Image 1: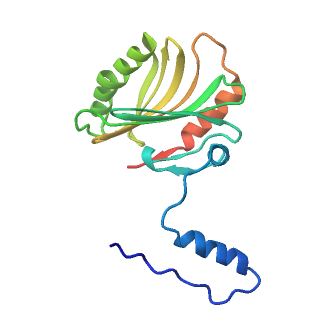
Image 2 (image 1 turned 45 degrees about the vertical axis):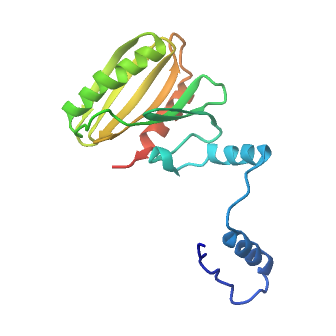
Image 3 (image 1 turned 90 degrees about the vertical axis):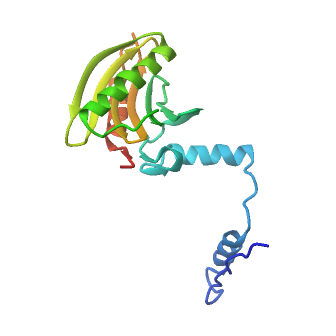
Length: 198
């Protein structure tokens, strides 16, 4: 038999008594009931616009632009991928948290190895091809900054690897289409404001 932590009772139940009682009941419940579809939709809508929201399984503080919708959460054996879409659906802001197969040092050599032997092959498998449009090392932030074109998407990435953890945070658009400048600027701003675990 497990023991529960005793609930703290409010000093008095006046004025905000109903709120305190509600908080007391919610705080002392053993397990929250599963959310209904409507509650899940409301929760999703609330988190889509929350700037600076820490997402546990990404180990990152996501900063999606206000009004952008969480499109999907994709998972695989060694990654989890959140993507938010602009109202037009033509621009994306995303965060991928991945686990490299080996320990990777947080230096330029380690990042380039993870990029060349991890990121590029995975993108090629997913999109048919990958073309590096621009790539540079940011020594101060200890990350690769690059733009790549794939069969479906072109992404502008911040790519960080720390041992057995890695992240790519990106602003994405459709390959072959002219990006909507205002949306792309918002996605890049969101990418730049995103923080990940170090």
